[in-house]
Length: 75
Figure 1 (cartoon, one colour):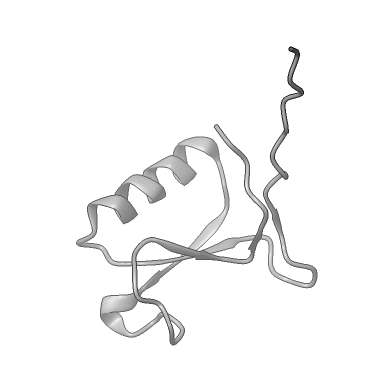
Figure 2 (cartoon, rainbow, N blue to C red; figure 1 turned 45 degrees about the vertical axis):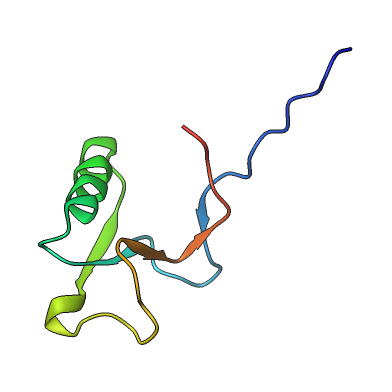
């Protein structure tokens, strides 16, 4: 039996948002560091908000958390 592969939605920005993804995190979080390195290596624009300095919006309970992203793209 042949199964069709479902392709994921492409990553994009919400309408009216800036060109950068907002990355909420902490400079001491190893997963945040990995995410920032990935964005830097891939040339993806992002704006880092350091939650330890109170720069994040309310409701952030885990790191890293991204805003302005619609959908996803599997690598």
